[in-house]
Structures are given as structure tokens and as C-alpha cells.
Image (tube, rainbow, N blue to C red):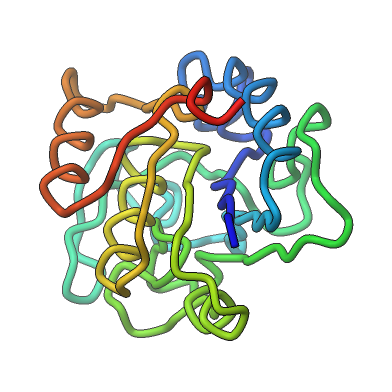
Length: 204
């Protein structure tokens, strides 16, 4: 069964959003075309409580881009984004969200960020996505969405770690590029871990 995982195509990551991914809106038409080609589609949503510890605003005297320890990981501090039940956390209106599809929320623990669609950044809690896919007998997944160098990358790496055959649709993702070259580094890391890359034209 061919499965597509659509990662975090939410208003705050798109044009005019609190944490805008450059050219992020360009992937929405591509994803919409892909959705029609898959037997099974899953969506993820960053779903932070207000005051999440990954927000710079939650740390007195700290600024966006500073790094602080959160548990056992070094946390890059972001602007407030994708706060539960706010417009910024909603899927973009142009995204085709299938009513019958499952949506997995992540980043709900205020103390730990969760880039991956599968686990939080300390691997303390699972989102339930792995179990869901295994229960349906799914062994091969395609991943797209935002952002290539954070939530998409960590989703790909965790999928591989959980023994899913994992394929990144490279023209259906964009990178935030906090540092120049982050996108290229992320692609190399995913490739070394065993991810396969295709473009939407290989499917459409």
C-alpha cells in the first residue's frame, strides 16, 4: 500500500506566517496532485501549547536563534508558532485535506520540542504514527511537506530507524535554511541514512 505523509503544511510555516519557510507555498499545488495518487494519506500538525519552551518568548533575556538546553537536547529558539487552536496552526486553505485521513499532532509537551512526525526530540514519547502504519501493514512511505531541514528531515530519519522504506519527494518540500546550506546538509544526512529521493514527476 502506497502511503503519503504530509508534514506540517500550516499557515505559520507559509507565506506571511510566524515562521515562514521561503517559497513554502509553492509546494501546495504539487502536494495536492500527489494526494490523488496515493492509497493512503496521513497529515501532521505542529500543535504547541502557548508558552512552549521552544519559543524564545518563553525564556527571559533570550532571542530567536539562541540555543538553550531542553532536557538532553540543545534547543534552537523559534518565534511563537503553531499554537493550538490559532489560525497559524491551521492547515493552509489551499491544501487538500482528506476528511477520512488521520492527522497526527506533535509538539504538545510544553517541555520538549517535536520535529519528527514520529517522536519528540528526546524520544520520550511517540505520536502513535509508527503503530498506526504498522497496524495497517504499511512498510513503504513517501514524505513531503515542511520544512526539509527540520520536521521533514527528522521524520525521514525516524521512519528509517523504525524500518520503513522511506522516500522523500524532493520537489514537494522546502527548507527554512536558518544557516546557508542547511538544506543540502539535510539531504545528505537523509541520503546517508538510507532515504531514497524522487520528484513528483516520477509519480504523476
